[in-house]
Image (cartoon, rainbow, N blue to C red):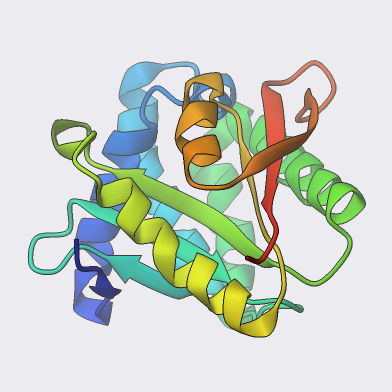
Length: 197
């Protein structure tokens, strides 16, 4: 199955696809317990993530029914103006969920830094529209990051809060190397790593 770099004009479609894919994800259910608010806010939250941090984003050609966001080793380039706007807008949009959202983000980054301190390719998000899952799209979306890591002889890493995803990642060469909460008292998380072939 072919995947292609995401075009800028497809960003909205990619965010909508990710929102549908993550609607029932344990981390997002914890951050935004109300299903209707989660449905409304997830596209915006994913878009902010895309706009703040540069990444390699891969998608299905044509209609975006799946996409994956890979961060290359090292500190990603941040767009400061967008980040400052998000710092103002986030509490206004998330209201009482703001502390959970920020606490979750800090916990994920701390866990990643502790468990995978070496340079690595990081899968910062992958999602396939629920109507198109189990067709090989997710595995195809993993390949650009896996291949880039193989070229640089570096590992890939990811974090998932959904235990049901573990088998998929393990089938694609990832191994669970840590399990914990994000943050303490928050959703369970698994860190997985794939060593270069």
